[in-house]
Length: 155
Image (tube, rainbow, N blue to C red; front, top):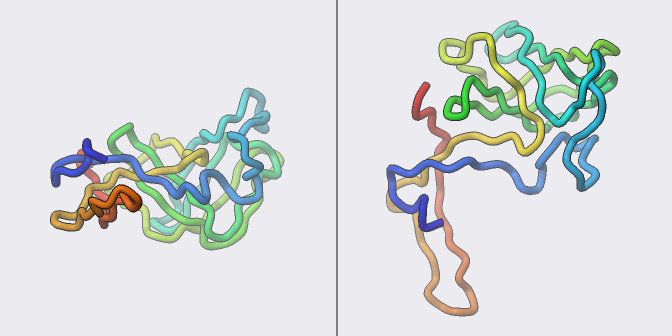
């Protein structure tokens, strides 16, 4: 927390309660075999962008299940990433391809192909809002509190 207290610091944030798609959250990192062969570790490919709210993802295991509310990270580079939520349940085809309806539109000006999709601890880059940091000085309650905003520092 000391590293990100200043207003100019960035950090990666993800939902610790939903580190992977709910249908595949068995307490272990994603694993398996992609439909076309090769190991699956939660990384896939953004095959196409239908519009800012609909994307096509490939490189998944056949039958991979997405539930409403699952997180999907679209990544252009390590510092250019965007976090979205699945709006409609979907299942990957036998070829490992799925069309996803996403909440929070994808910025199609900064996220043109090629991009990758990440399903294991999908995250976004955030920055603590100025003046929002607070923490108790009591030894029995040292939980900090702050608000933060998703940023695109290098988009």
